[in-house]
Length: 192
Image (cartoon, rainbow, N blue to C red):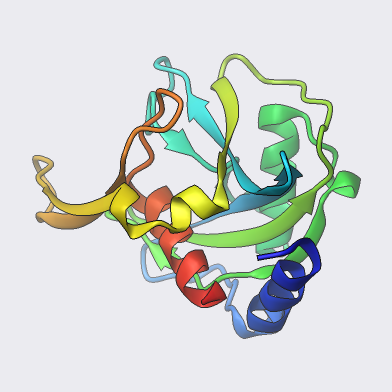
């Protein structure tokens, strides 16, 4: 998909952010938001990811989008996603062109995550918080769109019900799976 067409498609499908509830009572789920950063790189769209450090308490060593839990004064998912992105990898909120919000998703760890899609100029200056982020990298959207690069597996974690989880093949030594992989698949399906 070309540069302008993908932006128009995302804005059309996700631009009406008011449809996504963001209130404090989420039936025991904690509010969170991630930025789904689109970058135009090497003549095609890529999504930007982080790999979390092995020293974090939650989701250590996992590939994820920049983002995290909402703070009390975060009024929207956009506020949370942009604040967390700045804290984790140093991208200024003013450098993110928000295209829209995806439907919120619930995790087995009791988070309600709202993905916020944003376009970031590339290259961009990063200031990585090494306490939280081990690496920042991109994966081409065309590669992610190829169904032969992913599969669904059953995941068993003690104390949680078994889950069917999306796993992508390794790309550049990184394994994308779980809720981040589901966000990617939801975005790809919406762009078809």
